[in-house]
Image (cartoon, rainbow, N blue to C red; front, side, top):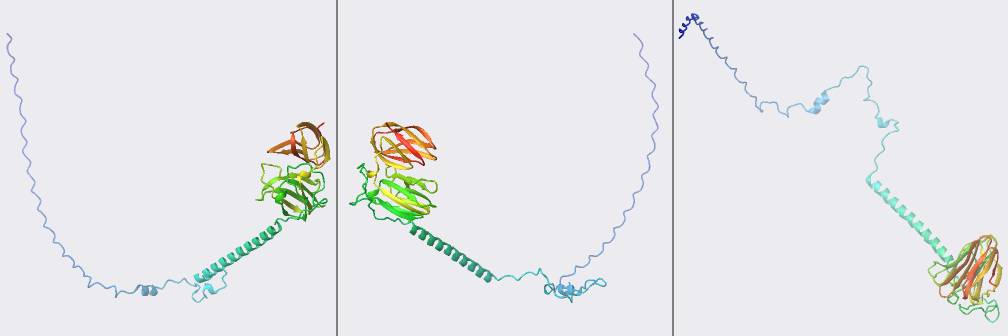
Length: 332
């Protein structure tokens, strides 16, 4: 067994330093004595607002500085007294404004009333000129009946009615002449239109132009079963004219081979047929066929010269031709 190690030699200790002496405390300075508080001045001892100098006096006493050699405007005439073109006019009193408004309102009412009165005057004058006028039937033959062969008994029978006039006119159709033939001619220089109207004044049938370049107008009226009853003839325009109303019962009978010039009205009583038709002229060429009940056949409706066929229905009917030239209808 090995021998134990010898203990180490003890270390030498450091000597302890002596403590430092404590400094003596500084003596406390005695407190400074406080100054006594100033007494508060009461509101009674303060200067009152009554004794203070007024603001107006202060303003008046304060004299503004004046620049040297500055012009003195105080002695000048007031600006409004000078020749000032921009002087503001004096305000109009409210009572004067109200009076002006009333005067303007009354003047406007008077003006409107005058315009209405003038309008009523002219309307009455115009309506007076348009009042229906009827002449007594005039006889074209002897014994109180129209000349010519009676070709039908299907329509009202009456003597021819002739009316002459100028310008606008509304001619009443007598109750016993509700269907017939209208013939219309005008003097040179006249420009007119003529048409059938109902009792209400609305168009109720054919119409035509009468004037330069137009042939004398002729058409049937009262034959359209679907139209209102013919009650008058309305003529409008300028110039002199002659109107004739005649019975359809005395319209010429249409031949198997018929020709003519211008407008025409016929009674056709034949079987249905296809007819060779020729027209030489300008403007419209129209062939219409009317029968009962509610039969309306537009056989031809062409413009300018034309050749072709026209289909006619059978039975008694009224044929109306509107033309500006020569025509022919050949049914064989």
